[in-house]
View 1: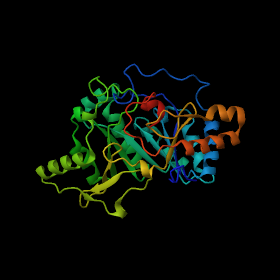
View 2: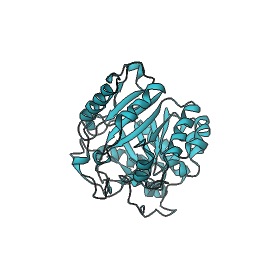
View 3: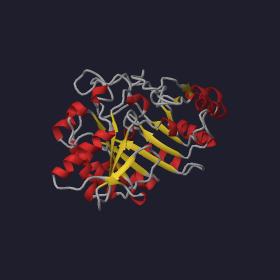
View 4: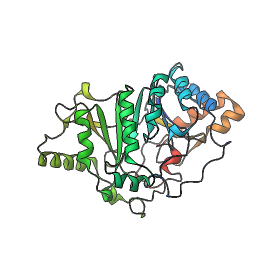
Length: 334
């Protein structure tokens, strides 16, 4: 089906939990967020029911998010159930990678199509600073495990924050020798992020993708590397996202840029979001939510179907540069 602006909506992001084993500075406060009660969180079987109803409006691709989705009990069985569902063609997952070293094989066997790993720095000290509690080695082991399990593509998502002064070329070089697809994501004003120094999101922290591409190319040339060129269609990773892809000539992977602020893609948006407590969000930047959990528990599948129809009608044409949302990123699911 199409929304009220004529866009085909075929992609549903499902947050499995608001819990996370990190406390990333752009995602949640250092003390964490007030965790939802057991009865507030959708049960696994309820998520399956909602996903099955979603196929009736044309949802074909599902991404599992969090918080950190791999801390949710039953995630492997959920992947298998979704993968075996009529109408669902792709099931993917976004993770910080910590638990992948022990779960990648089971997820692959269950039918997970692809995996995105969040990683914002390759410097161990800065990694602990950004995540507040994490260790770089644990995420790097997760990347290795994803490759060893045979996931293709394996994407690395890096949020770019100017004040962090990340080594962007080092990230881009990850794509040269291994089939890794590094994507740089502009820092978004979602929730009440504490920012890189506790002051909160600020537009000066946003590095527009065009500027970032120039920075990477200048640093590459300074090290004797060629500049990034537009990736050939055959080299671009599978997926349904808005990234623009480039590559170093002869590289095994690619470098992508996701530009929700400097070059927003609202006119091509194909997604809805389901929070862990069962609220359907038509737009990441909007606080409009439809209560699917109550609809399911009180009215059954037909009530859920009507929620999806309502979400299609409420989906805005544009985020209109809105700054801040009532929920933090960890509570929305990204």
